Figure (cartoon, rainbow, N blue to C red):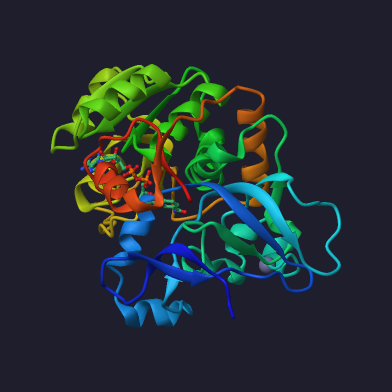
Amino acid sequence: MTEMMKAYRIVEWQQQPILTEAPVPTPGPGQVVVEVAGNGLCHSDVGMTQMPGSFGEMLGWKVPFTLGHEVGGRIAALGKGVTGFKEGDPVAVISPRSCGSCRFCANGEDNNCDDSVVGRGYGIDGGLAKYMLVHSTRELVPLRNLDPKIAGPLTDAGATSFHAVKRALKRIRPGGSAVVIGAGGLGAYAIQHLVALTSARIIAVDTSGERLAYASELGAHDVLDGVNPETAADVRNILGGTGADAVFDFVGIDSTIEQGLRSTGKGGAFALVGAGQGALRSGTWFDALPKDGEVFCFQAPTIADTLDVIALADAGRIRVDADFFSLDDVALAYEKMERGELRGRAVVIPD
Ligand code: NAD
Ligand code: ZN
């Protein structure tokens, strides 16, 4: 008889996920089973629960599947032929899957690998359960000092925001500036990466006072309450009349995209990371995209980004704050995320 475990799963498209049961995975050749120490909750999970089934099926996702794509844990079982790891080793799991042999992977763009479209926690079973199957050791990062319980959020919130910041680095001039719209899970890490990697003046924008207080604690120099039609003017005022070198939008609705683009200065970068499904309009010719700048979007992290962020955290150069929840309280944790009431990333510890 198949052994079962508690798992928080999407069982039917456009229905609330439920705490139910899933089979305990066993590793095939080359595969590994990780005992989940902690799984970070991402705002993308909320979007997935609202996704039309036709879209999910087009992506190749199959219900039911267990949510959770930010996993730290310990090796619980090794499949045939696996080398380099042993039972009990602490690891973080690379969030996007990748094949390792396509031209994207060969170019270090494993985040763009076709395999990344279906992943643990989006289309196949993820980390909101005691055990999770990992398809190859390519997707494991050994941990040194870092507690596997808090490593999960680094693999997506930490690493996706790192990818965006690193991509915009060449646009951020010495003594430059950056705006972070949505200082939640990803945005708070973006602030930390900007502090670690640049001398930029950082402006954080959020609708939650608690998130703005946390952003200041992490090193944001200025904070703006919410996005309104004056936000771009406020940003430009703070910066002495010019736009920002880089603007990161971790919300991605019409108003944040519009104000974010207007806040971006000449030669600057506008990064659309939030999946709020807002429209990106270029406006009229003089009030359009940043002159000689760039706009880039929805991206996920590479393996290299993940290794960098874990190394930064391991060395104590970025903070990893977490609010812990049990599997029974996952729905409550998502509600707190929606209300902007979390301090760190919500991390679920499966029982
Ligand atoms: P989160 O809920 O932790 O953070 C979002 C923050 O935005 C919150 O602090 C919230 O108060 C704030 N906010 C909401 N509306 C706002 C508004 N109108 N103006 C200013 N601030 C506002 O979410 P998260 O987990 O950090 O995810 C952020 C976004 O990034 C989501 O849309 C998620 O789907 C997306 N995401 C994208 C990728 C990717 O690879 N591109 C990866 C992970 C997450
Ligand atoms: Zn590939």
